[in-house]
Length: 334
Image (cartoon, rainbow, N blue to C red; front, side, top):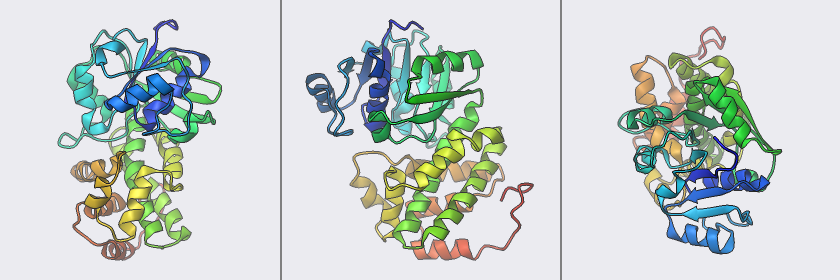
């Protein structure tokens, strides 16, 4: 990796554009690949992305492109594509062994693969890291402070990439727990939908706080079953991201859940959206994988049923509230 090389970013949505703005804040050259021709044109002509990140004047060192080949000489490539398209897009990127930093949060439908497992299946030859944590795109794009987890199996790789991305207002904490960093992002998206349901159904702040804490128990049970470490799940990529996403209406997953809580159906809510609420796609595959591992995730299971249209909001709330009373000790995590 060379500081003179540009940094590549796959994905011109809100998060990809915000990361481009953050990286370019010290003058670093950024090449931003976007699917939408109007995004490429707006970034290059007007230094703006009104479609996904309105109100942010983008740095002049950000150059947008619709050609994946333009990223082949980048020092590293941040992948901010929707989880269900990540494997296909990585397959289109020229592989010269450059590091990939996966910034998407989700599980691949059909395979139940995490994003690093999708990249492994594609056969990428370079190092792979995961970036996750409590970040809203509009705040990062505005230069407000944020801290994230940057995980790679090789700690030296994580440290090198953290140094490449660190900025005064953007602080990466390194880890070698790739599984934990990914699972935190997957599960918190599903739980954010549940918290949105609580808001939309008018169930109050007590219910939301209870759901966050019980949801964290579900995240922990599943994460430990997958080999994650507890300190990762209790850190920025797990609990930190969970608290942010479940506590703010700025979250795409939260707003989807709020619509469900208000009585709207998932299909119409998702059809109306320009951006992707990844939790809607991950919920069913997550609970299926958890069930195969003998992990109980009642809140996530309820969300999956709501998304599928199998149950009404009031019915699923009644089911959750009527579950058998149990203890809460950390020795059983659930």
